[in-house]
Length: 153
Image 1 (tube, rainbow, N blue to C red):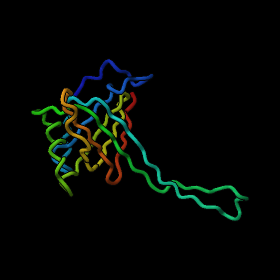
Image 2 (cartoon, one colour):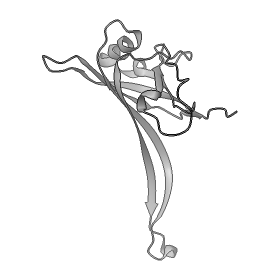
Image 3 (cartoon, helix red, strand yellow):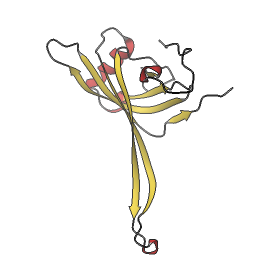
């Protein structure tokens, strides 16, 4: 299922719901991407590893070099039984190892695309007695993602 973004131009400010995303339900095999229905939030965090040192010739000023990066995409939403994407992510809550490997794709309103090999970690199911059941999870990068810029006309 893909959402039609024809009403969004690539310029200006856009709501988060103008982004589309999906997971590969076949792990890391192929390039299928399905939406996880009833997601309410998508937050992309970048972890930067910076090595720093104090060189004698720098006059007391620190030196720094970016040496590594990782991305964590946190998802919050509702548990929707019967939705293929939602069922796939929820099925990983008791899995370990290679079974939790997937590919996460985000398409931004301007058409740029982040394609990220990842490990899916289900962090929360359930909720309060009178609430709608939750499905919260993270897609944590595993190796180098691809960032594909949209073609400009």
